[in-house]
Length: 384
Ligand SMILES: *Cc1c(COP(=O)(O)O)cnc(C)c1O
Image 1 (cartoon, rainbow, N blue to C red):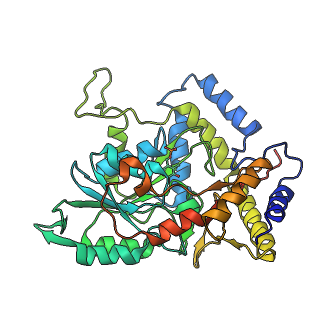
Image 2: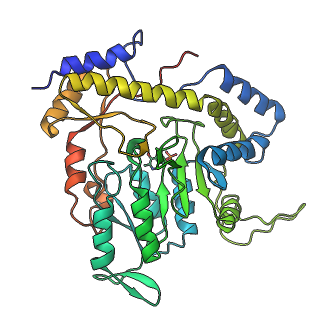
Image 3: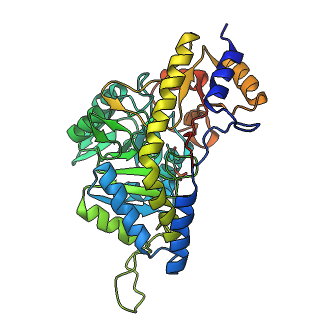
């Protein structure tokens, strides 16, 4: 039997002097954010035009090693826009994982498209390249340069892998497969700012990648997201479509297609610029926390979810694996009662009512991980 109280003690010891409740992940902010917000208010540019938006985009692009970064109101909007730009069309299929946050599939559904669920692998908890390879080889056929699902004849329009809890998914293998089949690759790197595979930042392996700056992510803008791409044409179209497709003109209102109001406001970008000053320290502290958890849990015989080989994980949410749903639920009840906000993984999306009928391949690892995994409080412990 796992010693639940000992695990709770390990968590409490990481957050001495915190109040009644230890949150799962709280944003870290202080004087720097206040100063940037005040400067933004003084500038009077608080909406979607302003110097902080451009600066935040440049800083994220530089940090991630992407040629372009386009800031959006949130990560879900960034995903929606990236899929539209990948030319996903109503009736198509998008290959993704079932073990992910619901926003991944929601963005697919906004395009009038069905997600097609594939399993995750045990090491990364991200999209498994092996079933992807099998499906592309056996489940698809090519016709007129298009990739079609053999069973339904529906077009397979894109692949959308997600790096779970900031653990880098096997994007080198996934990208090679997508290249071989001419399948556009869009990365949901919403959780993976500061995560790298083979020295390359997550979100930069495909045609486009997406980040989120929601309040519970590693870096927050209150709400916000980003599209990363190396393609000049896609970047220009992303900027145009996220700002209501308005043609540049000194006074006239001419919009040349159905656009979106998806641009990040300057106020949020100012907050983001402040957070960028903290990013190295935030990431360093999350890594320290992960090392502490891993060591202390190993002493109890509990397995901590560590970064895969050749990877740097941002350890957005630290995680451990218990024996199964029964033990997991018993632990969660005890932890929550003790004021420690541990959480289970998401319900796999193929078990949610709106995605239950979507096509899928067997999902044994997604099912197993969803029944065993527990996220641990992962707020960086900064002195402000
Ligand atoms: C947070 C998150 C999103 C969406 O981001 P928002 O900014 O909250 O819209 C998308 N996908 C995954 C995997 C996420 O964790």
